[in-house]
Amino acid sequence: MSETGPGVGNAQVTVGRTDLGRRLAARRQELGLSREEVGERCGADGSYIAYLEEHAAAPAIGSLIRLADALGITVAELTGAASEYPAGRTAALQNTRLVKLSEGQCRRLLSTHGVGRIALFTREGPAIFPVNYVVAGKDIAFRTSEDALMATAAGTEVAFEIDRIDDALRTGWSVMAVGMVAGVTDAEELGRLSALAFSRPWAGGPRTHWMKIVTSRISGRRVVQR
Image 1 (spheres, rainbow, N blue to C red):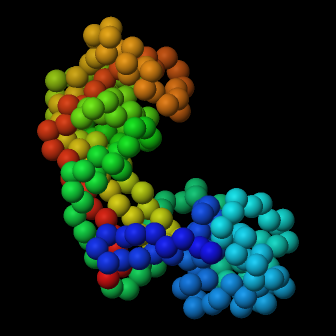
Image 2 (image 1 turned 60 degrees about the horizontal axis):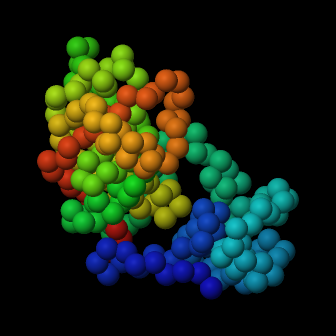
């Protein structure tokens, strides 16, 4: 049985347990098909469709081709192999709206680590940089190299943004925090941030210079279906 996840307000979205399951469930419901009907279209039992929606599975390419054909989409769309393209290429749902998120919701979405984008002003003009980050209290911390442009931004106001776009469900949210950025020099704080770090920066290299954004305001929005 698939999950029914709470949305914002009265919106309810039925999803699977994995990315494949969520895409499968979303497309099936968009077409108004039951699991049994999808199974009949691709020569499988309805219980197999239920399994794909509810469990981590790795179907053979032949099964994926038949399943995608039954749903009227490509294998790339079903499996998420089109991730090389920017998110949000699918058509919008009808009757959607933007809902403002509370500060608590924004901070929960920031969570403890991930990848976000920092917008700042440089000598060449405005620029945006993706960074791996961690949340330390109300501060957002990240590592860079000492000679990087971001390191020279210490003492200035920057914006930090994260988002999540779900092409399968055609929903999404974004959170933006604004604050002053500063270099971290205190040994105790450096040790605490290193302990919090989920992984090394994806970009590699000697990115050992910790910086933090002391947030002064935070806001967010979510796209939901009425």
